[in-house]
Length: 103
Image 1: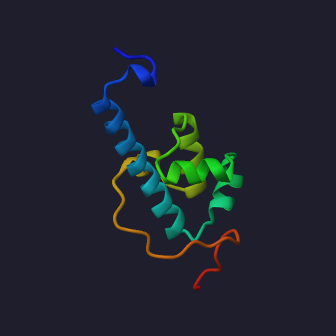
Image 2: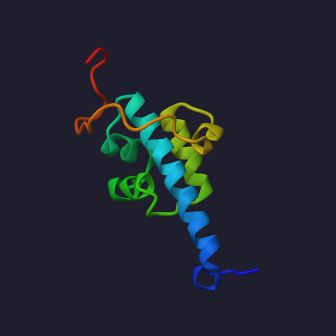
């Protein structure tokens, strides 16, 4: 059983990358559905904005405890983060905290 990334097979590495991308896309989808900016999610979850960006793009791994922090901010059960995203993003990025409701 490999214990370090460089000890993993290419197949396993690709599988992990696909899973990171799926979870990241789902987090982004949930964040956008709530009109929450990356900055606001970062501030409320205790992560950096760069980490949120990396997670959403599937480039960064995250400790599973941090997934609970993200789920708490998004007000969803942690299992919601592990579902496949429903669709492509529906709205453009917003960089001002939470969007005003109805806008």
